Amino acid sequence: MVTKEEAIVKFIALNATYYVPKGVMLSTVPYEISNKFIQNASNGFIWTERYNHYVSDMVNIRSISANIPLCGVNFEVGLDRPLVHEHRHEFEEYFGFGGHCEGYSTNRIVIRFPQEIDSSKGSIRSLLLFDDGGSKENQQVDIEFAKNAIRLMAIGGFVKYWAAIKEYEKWFIDIAKLNAEEVLDIRKTMPEYIFESMRPETKVSVE
Image (cartoon, rainbow, N blue to C red):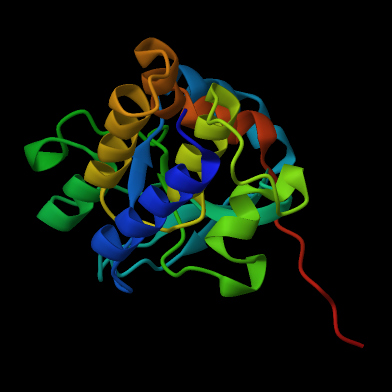
């Protein structure tokens, strides 16, 4: 039996190996999802024009900040899309376009995961055991735990490279003996999960 505690230890090890304070991890949203989101007036979210130094020092982009409820707390992710095209490598790489902006579309959306870990959300262990009241770490790992763990690794900003997610998937398949198709589907459907669960970012007002 592979326990939740063992899965947490593996998560912590991947966090130590694949996290750096600079940079962000990105996920390109399939057009099937982004087109529908934009056509539906972005479901009440408001795109704002902003500067992003990872994209360009010449042109602004459109962005949305959204809260994703996960493991009992909310994590903020960004949605970015082009405002105008720019024939520069940084811009093309960020949005996943080809050279000379081949395939350019203003409907291209990328998910920008957190740059820094927000320690106020709790420890890795407490987050992953949130539905157990922070205990039961000796329970057997199941696919629901794997879903929360893999999603948390990306959405919580605990790693900066997709190689970490792939290594964690392999661990759940080879060590925890979970169904490979179900495990691999977690990453594949992450954009869909985010768009279905996200809520507008809420600002705390100070009077």
